Image (cartoon, rainbow, N blue to C red):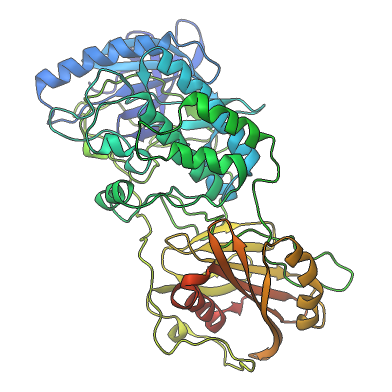
Length: 549
């Protein structure tokens, strides 16, 4: 149709809030009731056979009506389902909310107790849907809305399906976001509630760590990782860890059920100690409080499916007019854009200051626009043979671009320094003066901490900090605390190991005073791969680090 003013003679389409594989969502005005609503225009690929298009249209209308009957605070309301110019339009409540994806992108990862609380709300919404025979099929952070007051809403049942629907379209394409799809769905098995519980597990893993457990630089690589790679540890402790790993059991027959995972999440929501372990403590000025202790290696990794962050995200999408597309579009939607590996296929993307394609109109061709973003590579970089352990006397010249090793990139960080990190490393803030870079693969963490007014003696600062740090680490063992001259700066290296949940963790922390500021360059990773994977990251960081203001 060409620029319709009204849909079904009632809903006036104003601005596009967002686009995804299933179509686009509009902010609209209900002329009859005088209220603002969200309207999702469902579109099919232009090359879809006519008979399949007709079947999908009928199924979409039918299942949207089923979803509209769901009465649950965690499922947004569908007001109306209409057909216009041969396509379904789903009329929904319009929410002012941010998504879980936004929260992870802004904060890096969420506290374990909050992750568990969100998980309980999603679980409750899924149970309500499953009781009605509906499987969501696209549970992911961008489809979880976080409203003020704590309400969590699971949105966009846009590719949902009844239990009896097929997992594949007639042309053989899977529907969903591979990073969040269960192994059985990727193998083409039938659709059932355990698939949603797997996706819940991936969502909680992402919220707790900042990155999904299985990802690669392309769709097929991601699918292969889900099917073949072992499930990584989420790096959190206690019942939340048990819940996440239980949901990520690749065998749906032994995967945790809703009844089994609920008490674990309830316990985790009350367990304020589950979020972090102790690990490093940069030095501080005499009389000033030292920076707080931090967690194990890369357990707090912060990669997203969509980007490598190079600056903290500002809240430019708040308040977000979230077009809550809670609809059922049957199991037979076929378009390549549904293989949304970047996890960002969301129909909730507009702000008071920023709207998308304000003059756009519903299209006739059914072709879904795609704004795919590159995904960082998970390939790890092997250091050159001439990279060695720092000596006790390391006087070097100022770094240059030539000092950046192959496979690394120089990051100009907003906190006032530049440093080389492995390509694809994910950045997140952990407080106002501390930033983490998580290396692809999730095993190595580079942390840069800044002290505005550092004390005069880096070695003594480490010695003073050691008792409190060692008390919080199981089987802590000091390797060395050595003073050195790092370029023109007085410095000290503190190297140690401890026993983490998954084996021995090795850490090396260099503190140095640039007058008046102090910095700490900290790298940690598994002891068994320290020489091959983590130490080269430390070497590259110390070779290239430079304060910029």
